[in-house]
Length: 333
Length: 274
Image: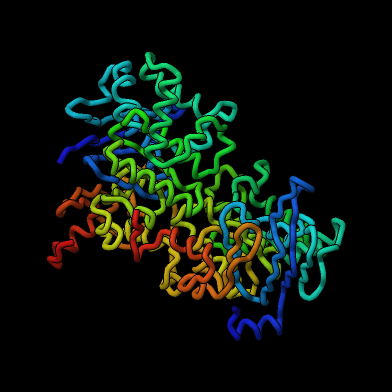
């Protein structure tokens, strides 16, 4: 299987005044495969967006890469020359739709001038008219109205704005598209339309894989191939979508699924519980498993030792309890 | 479309009766009908949801029910009393001891210079007679406990030291101090993490259980509405296009708009065709 991106033991910290550090991403390893959607889910403050900005290479101080590597092909992007990175990786190999991107459009400029900016940044030799023509063809191919190019951002609805952002972010045919909460500010109908566009881009092979960050697990059920559950800067569980959602192993995944309110028969009857407590302060994360202070199953080992990964099939989990109970009962996950 | 028990209940004890409520913004060519001839009634102790997408007129309806905005036409009967035309700050304040709200954004509902204690103490100004200081302190302690917060730890903190979930709980504690008959919750959990959402909603559901409070949710979150409500009112373009018990509307929507909406909601049991 062709891997487009391999992150190994990725560590990214925020450096604070006074020398303290917030360990927002602390030892995350994952790979991104060709032709897949990888969902990343977790509560706010668990490092999802920090991870997105590292994977998308859009991080700026005080966030910095503390350790680990990220391989594109055989090359570690963190050791690449800045200029090379800008020309050959950003926007052309990896592209990002950051959180709140739809509100970042310049209100005094038409959409077309944004298109020109993006294309000419990478290919200064392309004329303005050609750049706009390229965007027009892409919009046509995706069944979106080309007149948006001559409109101002405020003339577009939320759903349309987000779709336009995605189209522009993928104009240079990046292999990897990283989307950070692209649908959180949209109502359910626009949300579906945006996801449909992402799937079309993947099907038409304009992009080759998607990282989709969200806190809405039920949403990922409809289009993700694999899901990574992130907690307090680390992965708790990563595996195929249906396994993670319908048969979670890690207590945090179960708790997260248990706190979801979906509009279907059965939700009303069950007493849905939130997860008690809050994610830990990442300046001083817990010594052992980071979820242990909130975990109702935690044993002594959980509080003192960080769990080792355990891989069964395509799923990897970081949890002492499931490892010991599995061994005791002999039930494979 | 109401079932019989609700019909009986609403005949016997209707707390809120809304008739032909209309709000028009602008005039002439630029007139926008935000709320278009909306009528419904809410029984005492009932939990209902006004459900709709952005721009459907649900928040405008809520603002009129809170007397933060004057309707263009129509009447609002609260406990059989027409409160539509009452004017003046004094009447409004009296009304607010009966009807309170929790809003969407717990980050802008606070004055950042006030501690939690000051914020909560200020709520007593709304009451016709202010309790003594020791009574106030006891009430604050109790209300903080009721929303699952540690009073000793939090009362001296300021808003920037609190999480979104904590702020929203403090908003609810404030409502408890006033103990209104009706609570209007306008998107109470949309800015709160999915994992704390259920906790907040369970607290609100407890208000009916313990105090018999009537609650109106204003939301676009169909999961929330279904989980909490007895009846749902689906709004689209200023009108109520469908109403019924939560189960009826979710399992068997009749209106075209509701059908489409239900189809777009991510559920676990069936996968979208994309």
